[in-house]
Image (tube, rainbow, N blue to C red; front, top):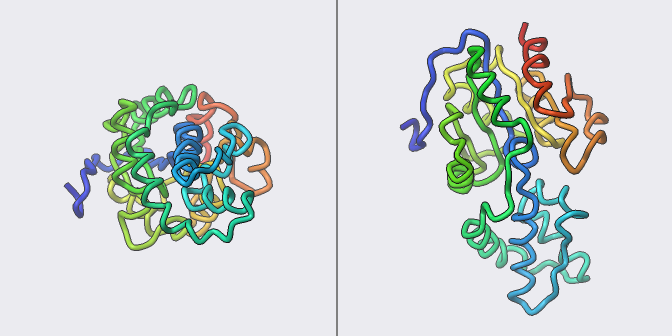
Length: 233
């Protein structure tokens, strides 16, 4: 246990460390996230406001972003948002893996990196407890040497501190690390930490993430090992 977490320290990786975002990067969690926001609207007697397909992108920006968008569409002042947020988290926690799946090739890519001598960890803006539950239910928690969530520290991404913690708890050094993500938050985190960023284009944002200027991008996890090797050589 490290600083109250269940992180397992790895031996110092010979080749470097790869830290992954969770939502929209390792796993498509959008449908369960959208359902949690719609559950908040439903308990107030309102119709489902968010669409699991069209609004998948906003899901990866967090619960408050989903609620804010929903109340904007309802022309409501959003005064219910802070009251609804704890309900959203509780509902989501109870239904966290109904539709969520790892992206194609994600597990094989992580296993491959480990086999090649890289340490791997997770840095997410999902609350740590929920991230722990989700990764465990997906059967992949043991693949990651560290897990840092939105509430692990007093700050969250894009502040670089959570990323630094994820690297160090994996047994690595920031200078020999890379962040894999899917949003501007991940891009800004990598820039703040002074590390390369790999953005995925298979999420809801598609090729639009290229406008963020990542050092590299992938359209499938099959491409990741070669990209990481190039960035950390």
